[in-house]
Image (tube, rainbow, N blue to C red; front, side, top):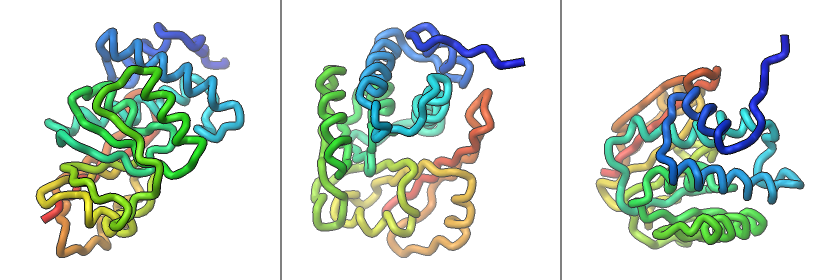
Length: 216
């Protein structure tokens, strides 16, 4: 029997998020639904995301980016989202943690335009777009945290943070279970692994990991 699919609307978004163990405040849910509309409206060429089904987008984008809040007691006050793409995890992270001063870092022009438009339409404060590739020479702003999702390996990413992540700052890597291979080979005199969280998104088969490194 074919699984019953919910029609895309705000109520269905709430139902699906609750199914995945997430309950949002009304104003946060309203803005996430608005963001979803912007994403679908501007994704006709699938340059923002290749996912099409409403339930799949909710599970693999929204729930995936929001559920990590359950593992972090307090986010750093100032953060970078490196390789933000269409705003993941940065936009959901900002919606659920409005106190964070966040910079979305994305070098691809079409996605830069989308991020700038989304920030304006959602009327978000304390958030900006850095339309360049983050390297040790391009990003000099000192921050207490960086986060990246579906990005390069940990070993490839850490050298880029030399000029922006302050000592004692934390790097949050959203990964799949294969990150265990990276952790087994991890060696650094500058960073230590402070937390590892392996989990499955509730009511899904999506196995995920959140790896937190602290700069010494």
